[in-house]
Image (cartoon, rainbow, N blue to C red; front, side):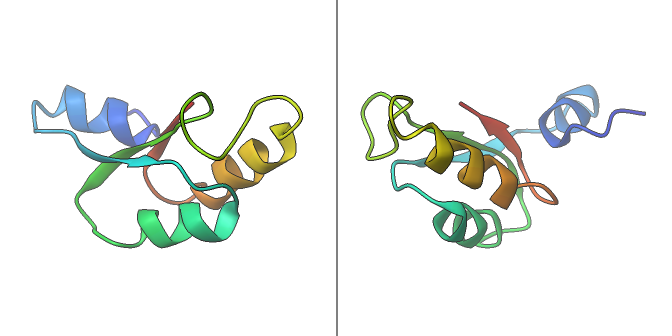
Length: 75
């Protein structure tokens, strides 16, 4: 059985609801992840949002860590 939330949802042939996150940090990622029990994924926008890959890779890692027990992270 898949542990990846998005993969588990797709394998169950259910709709995969998600959110697009443009703010940096684990707090924002956790807030979005806990906003609905129906989220299968959260996209962390490192190109158009405020979370940059360089030099803000630490913010991206914190955001992904904030989603650990919730929806799947798409970066």
